[in-house]
Image 1 (cartoon, helix red, strand yellow):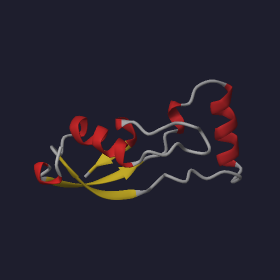
Image 2: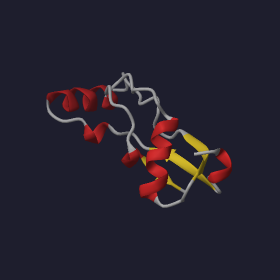
Image 3: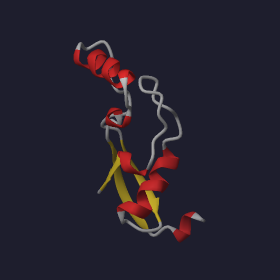
Image 4: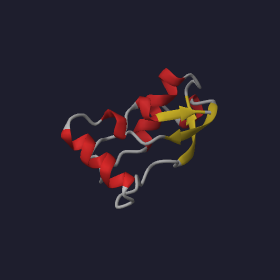
Length: 86
């Protein structure tokens, strides 16, 4: 989809996704963050994006492709549920 086909400009806010990690690894991550040894490098990141539609279910996947890297703490790639669309 070309940039001209994306008429909406939205601000996406990245939330920390450690809630999606399950099992003992989640407990380790929680403890590291609580002790201050680890900080989510993506939490609070905002970005202006041009999207095809401002609804969460359409803008979320487009926002996830704009953040391609995995988190070094939890090892997860972003998905559409990790963003607040404004």
